[in-house]
Image (cartoon, chains in turn green, brown):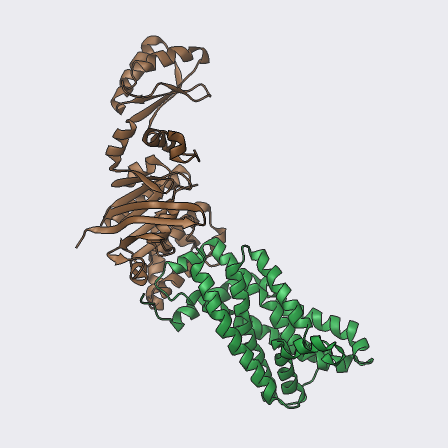
Length: 256
Length: 325
């Protein structure tokens, strides 16, 4: 079967559609604006003192890079839900009846999510700055950290897209994704150093992609060796893409 | 070369254990309207989804505009428009945004996409609402936008899946007008409906399907002849005259038609050969001194069509063989 070639222009047209939808329903931005603010406050002031031997400020330094990863994982839920809703409403059937590549609606949606992750970065760093967080490196490294985080987010989003194409209801997307995201975000080096955890959990933490992202972002923001963690994070990005992009596409094509 | 814009043979499709299509043939000549008539669950939507490349048939073949839906889906998609219960517009986008988006996906330059959108909005009387999100549209407006969206690419074959279900009679007439003008522009239309009246008003040929199989294919005239002309329904002003009314009408009903039917609300329906009997009915009722507050001529309902063709009610979920045995 001769396949219609992927067109970047088509994907951008659909990315614009998704952005327009987001702007029309601003409550869709709560998870990337208020959520990082609330989590930063909660963890810094409730747990921070206890976890970092009384110094909330030093905990904030440790926490903020991790919070970036945590928020990204949490806010990936929305894309899967939205795509499921699109399918339910028949909008994807319209796209499927058009002579465009099958992957275009999915790629368009993920591209539009870029804006949400950019907001996560700005809010997390901006609010952290108000609370007293300062980077110890330079602005270029900060930009590199944020670029890495967004890159990870765009790869991670494909898991949510896949789940959105697979489950039976938009509500179920959240259920499935939370089951997946909670162990990943807490079973990592986001909130505490893994050295106090039991060995089996440390083993999990050490291979957890979020741990690699958080370590890389921490090193880029606070200083320290960067290389291997960035490499591991990029490898995970590639891995997630290679596995979940085809799975999501297949689920989309098969979904009748 | 063939002059068929839509040609499907032996389409089958199962969902799990449910057989949605059990070997359906459909054919529409270029520039005509094919009406696909059937009750809910008959397989109409499944057939349309297969022809529109949204779904693959388990077996059978279909050509749309001469292109194979299985091996040349992109060629098919270039020549079709799809409107229905399922293919929908984006409620969060405005009318214009919806149509421009589709134009751009069809590779129109932005300017041309805008011009086409404006033209369609004008045609469908949506210009005033062009910059409103579609979620603020009424049901009829949304249906029109939906249809406009399927026409952006000037498709030569248009699939309309129950385009008037849920619309009030005036809106239904509007939709019929659109279908007629599509055909006069040379498009081929496949229209599914639950109403014989709609198929009769629009279609050049009608295929009746039930339980995933074709049970009749004919012109509207031929189909109406098979199901026995028209129906005349009357309701006496004075309920006590009901039996007299039935007696008068029985003298007019088709000789080979069905017995007069009561509807439980005091009305009686008879089968008549043509609308030419109407003056006779009025004269006889006047002579008998029976006043009526309802007297109407109409085509048989889908239910009656099915009863005539299959001997079962359309809503009957029993398999045909159970009914026969």
